[in-house]
Image: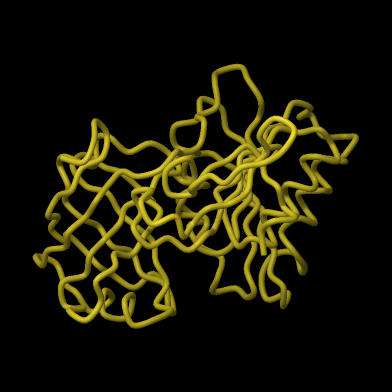
Amino acid sequence: MLGAAMLEQTVQIVANERDRNLYFRLVMRAPQIAPLVQPGQFAHLRIPPLKAALLRRPFSIFQVEDDTFSILYKTVGQGTEVLSRMRAGEELSAIGPLGHGFTTPRAGGETPLLVAGGYGMAAMFLLAQRSPQNGIVFVGGRRREDILCEDEFRALGWEVRATTEDGSYGEKGLVTQPLLAEIQNPKSKIRNYKLFACGPTPMLKAVGALAAEFDVPAELSMDEHMCCGVGVCLTCVIPVKSGDGWKYQRTCTEGPVFDARQIVWEGIR
């Protein structure tokens, strides 16, 4: 045991299936970890067939059902390519749930607007599922194949607005365009928003700028490279405000979710 709400467990693969193109869904049986998961947390996986790699891989936790949890991942390198070839019945070593996640909306509080880039959608699902009121999901990607999980969010009763940079699906442009239009829309029945976002850093910076401009609260899941995942190696630190200055905090422990107002963007590449 690593902590009161952080465990290391050997988990068994229940399913590992292609979602579309380079994206896969991996379901693992983890009776100790699954009940502890909160929205926005992640798991650190060691892939046994990848004997040459010592470091674990961090993945946002997508769904939790009974004693299982799942991740949504994209094959972008050797680790995820090897992971995509693993089959039901095989085992992985998992540490989780890790990190400081999203604040679950309270009943009668702000209407949540979720903003996701690509498989950033995975980090948002539990938040939508556990929110006492539905909101709007804004999802963006470079092309149609990068727009994920729409059916799952719509099944929860959420509205989904998609954008693609090449115009192959939904509105053409960046995901922040329809978000801005919603915030500025004088005919919208929603007047009390809170933003939640997960995706690439430029998108998060743009969402943070909108939140500041319109004085809307926002929580951002920062996309920083993690090595240890448990706060030891300090490779994932970002600068945050502290008194009259700033200090570093670790995205794997104090984050990955931060209040947008606290992030010092000038210190983030």
